[in-house]
Length: 448
Ligand SMILES: Cc1ncc(COP(=O)(O)O)c(C=O)c1O
Image (cartoon, rainbow, N blue to C red; front, side):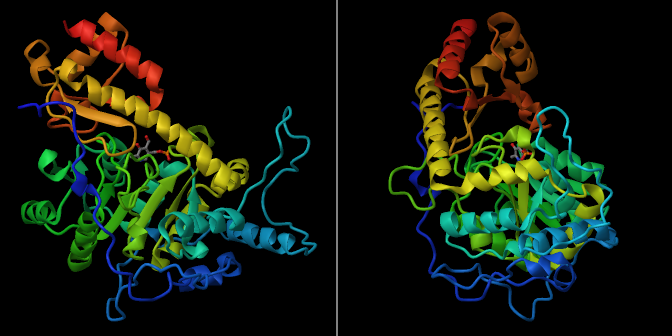
C-alpha cells in the first residue's frame, strides 16, 4: 500500500452544509404499549420551541416490526416503580408494598442508599437527555422515547433483542467495534460484514449495502458508528442521509452508535461540529449513546437509546425483565452532565485529545506505516503497518514485539477486522499528550 505523502489532511468534504429545514411533524408520541405504562406520566411530545423535529415517515408506511422474541410481558413491578416515583415527586404520600427492595438504611459504609428506578430510567434524566438533543442538534425528542441503559453496551443488547429475531441479517462495517458483531452473533443474528477502506472513509455506503444484499440476501438492519471505533472516521450529513434513504427503501432498521459525538476535530466553521445525529433525519432510526466517552464516565455504566415509538413497549418489556432498572446513583449524577459548565469542561478535555492527535499526525512520516484512516473524531488512529510488515508477519506479532521491546501497548486490528486487521493497529490517544509523545518516541526508536 502506498502511504499518502505528509501528515494526513482531513478532506474538507467531510461535513457538507445542512439540508433545508425538515418539513414538519413532532418527534412522535408514545406508542400504545408505552402510554399504558408509567411513561404516560412523562411529558410526551414537547411543544416546539423553534427547533425542528426529525421528519416522521409517511402515513402509508406501516413502520418496522419489533422482534417476535420481544413479545414478552413487561415486569409490571418495575413499571409501577416509575409511577410511584412520579407520584412522590408530585408530593403524593404513596405507600408502596410493591418492589422487593430491602430498606435502604443503613447503606454499607458511607454509600448513599439507592433503590430501583423505572426500567427506562428516571423521568428527569430522560428529559435531560431529550434537552441535550435540543441543545446540540436542534431537534425535539419525546422523553418517552428515551431509554436509559447500563452503558451503550446495555442498549445494544436490548435494541438488538427488540429489533431482530434469530436468523435476521444485520450488516456492519469492517473494521468496526467488535461488540456489535459479537452481541449479534450471541443472539443468533446473522452478521454481514461489509469490508470498507479509505475510498469510503471506512464507512458503509448504499452501493456497498446493495452489494451485501446481492451476496447475502435482504438485510433486517445495519449498525453504523460516526465517529467510528477503531477508525475515528465520520459520516457527513449527505452520506448519512443516503444511508437513511437506503434503509427506508430496503425496510432495514438503522442503528446509529453516536457514542463519540462531541469528540470531534472539525475545521473552523465546518457545519455539524459535534457530529450529525441520525435522529435529525429519521425518527424510525435508533440512536445509541453513552456517558462513557465525551463525559468520561465509563465506570458509571450509563448510556441511552432513542427509540422509534413502536419499539418503546417491546424495549421496556425486555429492559424490565433483563435489567430491572439502570443504576440509580449513576442516573442522579448524570443529571449534572448537561450543564453549560460540564460541556465546557468536557470540551476542554477534547482540546487535549486534539493536541494528542496532532502529535500523531505530525509524526506520520517518521512512523513509516501504511495508509491511515482519517481520524475525524473519537480518540483513535487506525493505520496499516505498511513497511513494518516486511519485518513482522502481522499486526499481532508487531504489537507483541512492541510491548516486549519498548513497553508500548497498541491494539492489533484483528479485534476490529477479522480479515484485514492483521495488517493494521489502533492507537488510542485518549491517554493524552504526554503519553502519546512518549509512545511515539519509543515506537520510532523501536523500529530503527
Ligand atoms: C463504538 C463504541 N460503542 C460502544 C462502546 C461501549 O461503551 P459503553 O458501554 O461504556 O457505553 C464502546 C466502548 O469502547 C465503543 O467504542
